[in-house]
Image (cartoon, rainbow, N blue to C red; front, side, top):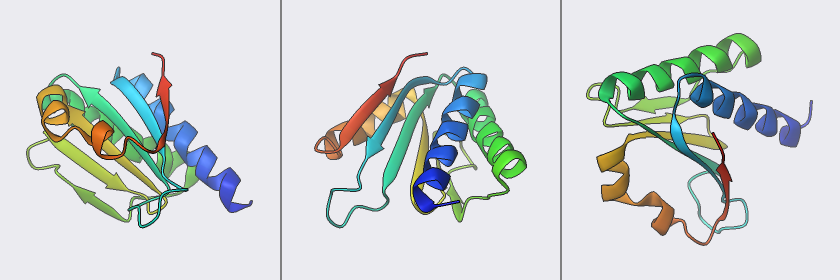
Length: 120
């Protein structure tokens, strides 16, 4: 399987897992044309409580592990679940609580990326 297909499969599984746990405001940022970006793709979503943020993150990890046999290279933020970052190297997933997402405003930071908003 080539890299593009693998990456797209990962993106699709992550979005599915977010939707399965009622994550909101899902956005995909294509950073592949931006120099020195941290990854090729960011996926950002919102949960309404630390319990939901934790559930979204857990479901992403479970679905990707079970269906694609892949695990994140690095995970941050599981202690308080205000913002959990799942780093799959070429794809980085950010699961935010609403206030934390508004505060850090990643959409503005990476505003020059090609952004796809996923309708729930």
